[in-house]
Amino acid sequence: MQTSPASEALARLRRVQPPLAIIADEEGLRPFETDAYIVHRETPMLVAVPETEDQARAVVQVCRELGVPIVSRGAGTGISGGAIPRHDGVLLVLTKMRRVLEVDPLARTATVEPGVRNLYVSECAEPHGLFYAPDPSSQSICSIGGNVAENAGGVHCLKYGLTTHNLLAVRAIDADGDVLEIGSQALDAPGFDLLALITGSEGNLGVITQVVVRLVPLPERIETMLAAYPTVRQAAEAVGEIIGAGIVPAGLEMMDRVVIDACERSMDMDFPKDAGALLLAEVDGGAEEALDAMERVRAILERCGASEVRVASDAVERAKLWKSRKGAFAALAQILPDYYTIDGSIPRRCLPEVLDHVFALAKEYGLTVGNVFHAGDGNIHPCIFYDANKPGDLERSEEMGARILERCIEVGGTITGEHGVGIEKLRQMCVQFRAPEIAAFHDVKHAFDPTDILNPGKAVPTLKRCAEWGGMHVHGELPHPEIPRF
Ligand SMILES: Cc1cc2nc3c(=O)[nH]c(=O)nc-3n(C[C@H](O)[C@H](O)[C@H](O)COP(=O)(O)OP(=O)(O)OC[C@H]3O[C@@H](n4cnc5c(N)ncnc54)[C@H](O)[C@@H]3O)c2cc1C
Image 1 (cartoon, rainbow, N blue to C red):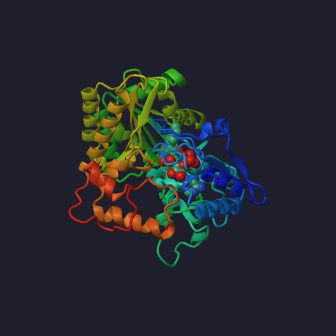
Image 2: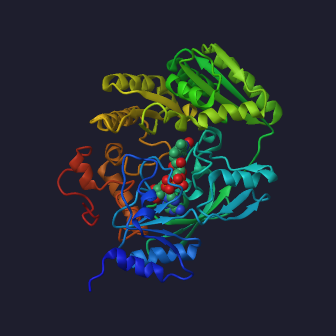
Image 3: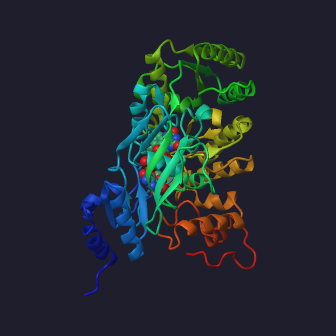
């Protein structure tokens, strides 16, 4: 009797010892059919939920032998569709590998399993006067493994860097089922910088099973300011002035009127009433240093036309301000049934011009757009609202999003600042990169994953797809004919 790949994989995975949690029934598989890129869905063939590295390795080995694709998944908060499963693949969910193995206050490191929540790392480090700096707004739920795979950013990355700047070492399983130990506890490691390579690799190069992160001392003093501006353009110009003055705030975030209204409705923030845009600026450091920076930033905010500048009087007020910023994406869900978040990166000096362009596009497409973003990093997040039940609404919002990302490229920026490529931005990859660069990405993937079973079809488009989409002009013979084409 012929067996299907699903039943063969199920039978083999059921033999893994100690027994592995497997979900194979229709109802159990449903919750895993999408991540936070909700416009696409796919039911996985099977879900495997290992609790140890050995179990995760056994899953990879079975899949390799059967030629079954593997999609790794952390908390499923990714916004570009990287963890969306495949109907012919195993979804490897790593959230049960969630032990904090060590917090070393002397080395200022934490060694954690991939399923540990981002915020929990800081909670474990706090008694030692330390914290883990990269803080995505999803930090209370997203996993460290997902953060590494996406090279996640956050509101404090302006000063403290992205995930890649706060990592020391990673253990990962490659497509052959071998465990790779990448990086080291020292400041440098010999050989090629594979740690940089696996960071942001979106599940394409290996399954991350352990992470050593850098911890930093909690600042002695923190000052948080809220500045209200009549227009987004004025707020954007203030951002340029602060950075141009040589100050590096811990965070410098912006929200426009659409977002302010949504936060006000859902969190009762008592924000200034007539502001067209708000800037949230935080400085930290030694007590005198933070006070001095606060005075300098406040002077610039006022000089740039702020109608009001508030300084949080204590930790409670500060937490409330950050709650609005970190809760903004949830608050936006009240505006229309659906929205999706664009993630582009631009040189900071281009902020006023690119934001004007975003508003002009919103007008052209007749769609509502709200902006809440890491202004200090030049990392924009226009949120485009649509109603999936209205024919053509989703397609128009996707087209508008694509035009925003193309504008980011035109001004010298990139198509992602922190959310990754996933499936959402495959087309824009063809615009951002030329054929030899795309081919180099495939060569790297091939070294870790020769049979293309690790999250295939995500993060890097095939050259043929680029040629078909017309985003890239490939003349004559396609380079690297050995790279699989659809
Ligand atoms: C409300 C909201 C706010 C957000 N704010 C931010 C923000 O401020 N900054 C930011 O950077 N992002 C933000 N995000 C996006 C998202 O939270 C991050 O990309 C996060 O890093 C994803 O982690 P996750 O555990 O949910 O990963 P998932 O969504 O499960 O997976 C993301 C990608 O990583 C891969 N992956 C996951 N775990 C592993 C592993 N162990 N080994 C190998 N590959 C793996 C998956 O295959 C997929 O490609 C936000 C999302 C939401 C919903």
